[in-house]
Amino acid sequence: MTELSTITPTAGTLSDGVHVLPLRVYWEDTDAAGIVYYANYLKFIERGRSDMLRLAGIDQWRMKGEDGVNFVVRRCEIDYHLPAQLDDQIEVETKVEVMRGASLDMRQTVRRNGEDLVVAMVRAACVDAAGKPIRLPAVIRDALV
Image (cartoon, rainbow, N blue to C red; front, side, top):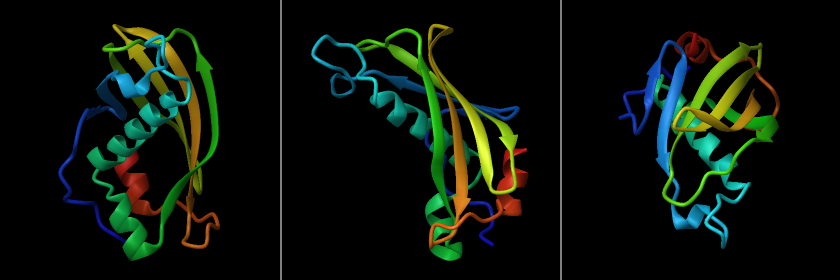
């Protein structure tokens, strides 16, 4: 199994199992009214999950290449409370809520100035190169405890 990565983290902080990724809303994220297009929140939370794993020392590209282990989103439930707008400073908070045999349940919250804009519950499953579910490798379990 691939060991923890030595890749350089990109952005955000990981403390006590909670990852926070600061982002800014750009024109490309918005509709004609300057409001974040609803599907772009999926991109924001994906970045949060990816950077959480990266900061935990998990190199997904290396894990895929060397071990044939991938993460796929199995389920996503998302509630939109308030819109983000052009040039807003937002944060994506990611926390693993439940770790199962082959999947992780994560709560991801997009906030602006401490106010919840979007809350998503995401289940990411661990699969092999053929797309079949496999147990979470111990290195991942240990890194995300």
